[in-house]
Length: 92
Image (cartoon, rainbow, N blue to C red):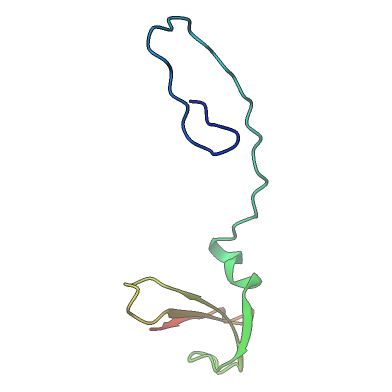
C-alpha cells in the first residue's frame, strides 16, 4: 500500500497496469520499558502510611488498578514494607 505524501490518502492502482511492484522496508523496533511482575513488582511502587493487618507495621507499598468495569472504583493493592512480613491485601 502506498499513501500520498501530502494528504495521506491511499493511492489507487490504475486498472490495466500489470507490472508488480515490490517494496521492502525494514522496521526499527522501539525500546521497551521494563515491566515488573511477581515478587519484585511492589518494590518499585509508591509507599503510603497504612497499617498492615498482620504485623501492624505502619508503611506499605501500594498500586491502583482498574480490574472491574469502568464505572466501578479502582482497586488498591498493598504490600507490607516489613521484609519479614510482606503481607499483601487489597481494598476495593
